[in-house]
Length: 172
Image (cartoon, rainbow, N blue to C red; front, side, top):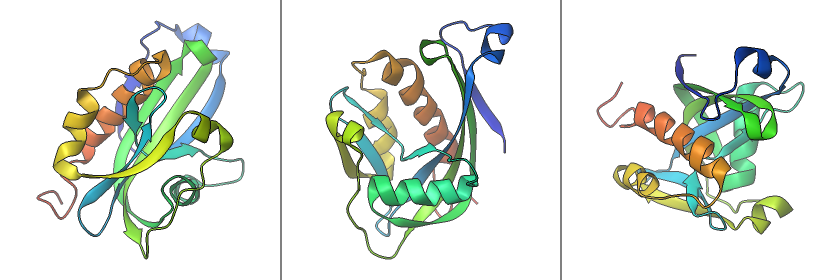
């Protein structure tokens, strides 16, 4: 998968990152039948993010993506293609994270998210946003926490810029 961005805003050195924990994550630009995209509003910290999360041990990335979408947006999805990957060197968590992003379509009926207690405490809300309004929405926000401001929002804006317009909307 094509590397789109390496995020290292805290200036982590190569030697330093070698000692960090490693996490693989699956993310998705999910479109519904009306051409709207799935976003998670993290109300407590004032930003939006793409659905996705960590890949469990023994799980492949596509399997993790489908599981995360079912949990976070309440939908089964069909993975349609690759968007790209983003590498993050997060000094604040001593974490080296690689996010693999795909574009996917909702399969079947929309359901309800099954947020974790932590997600509920952070005010997670599932929203569907018209594709042409997603980037302006995300670019105008200033997240209240450092993780959202220097990692999550820049990562997801990069992924969205690569993904949009979605295949079938002028991109093949």
